[in-house]
Image 1 (cartoon, protein in one colour):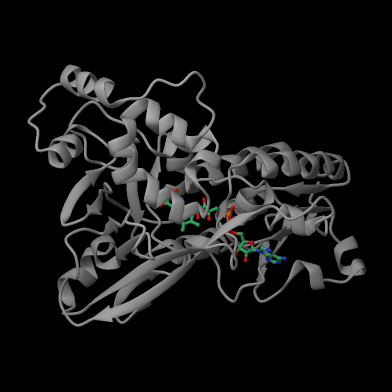
Image 2: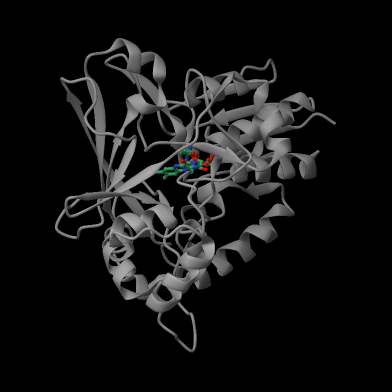
Length: 369
Ligand SMILES: Cc1cc2nc3c(=O)[nH]c(=O)nc-3n(C[C@H](O)[C@H](O)[C@H](O)COP(=O)(O)OP(=O)(O)OC[C@H]3O[C@@H](n4cnc5c(N)ncnc54)[C@H](O)[C@@H]3O)c2cc1C
């Protein structure tokens, strides 16, 4: 049976659900309070260069189903991301691998065995690993922790890494080889023409209507009643009027600059773990867009300054938020019985990579039918 479905949020989660439900014959209205599509993946051409408004987005996945699903909406250009980190006057490679250790300590380690031996001498033994700091100290020891991780994590999250839970450790792998790539997934690529164009294509369907600059919380009750199902991808605590308290988010300020030279730095992303530098990293967009790189004599960079207020970006992984989230999720489960579903990064308060957001959305669309 064809239903009328309201989807709140035109990010990748909302776009995937809209696309699949429209394909299944449902009538879908997608609203977003912003003036543009694509949620946090939004990008646009600025001064001839494709620039991401909410931070660089690198697509990577091992999920073949997601990868194949996306092929219909864009061509993809292979892109393997690399990150450098600046420590005093030295620029070294991340994630930590044999190159990183050799650069940092002036060594010539060659094998995984030598790397393990070196790190085992650095590592600190702890009875319990209860935080991100514990994870790092027990794996790489105090010196590497202080030089590479402490300042960056402190700035990024605004709290001591000793208060952050260990779930973040999966984002900080330690490699026993020379692999400088930031991700090791099977599929790593960028959509040719950008993510905004990709999402636009996902939403081009006779059963989909899109309304931008439309806030869910300003819709009338009678309007809401006209839908059989609602899929909400905004912040879950806001939906419930913060009745159990506000979930913490980390936000970012992006300071964009146009620079009158061909390149500003020697890599797309350089991290700055030094606590005396107020930003965490500098992104140079040209590296993601070889067409503009060839043709422009100027470049655009963004400095990223973490902050606690502003657009909600990263859920803060610590105990108080986990406890609060459990209460909101229990309410959300009850509401599902009435046809209201919570999805996506904000709707489930999880840091989701794009591929995970799409995979979850595909599963939910299959469940709704
Ligand atoms: C700085 C940063 C960098 C990232 N880099 C990567 C990366 O390199 N690789 C990767 O795989 N992932 C990356 N991600 C994650 C990626 O952004 C998410 O996976 C993706 O945005 C999830 O899509 P979503 O639709 O769930 O959420 P969003 O993109 O946040 O979309 C939610 C939408 O809902 C709208 N909305 C909220 N409330 C309302 C309301 N009341 N009414 C109407 N609309 C509303 C919002 O305006 C927004 O457009 C990054 C995230 C951040 C923050």
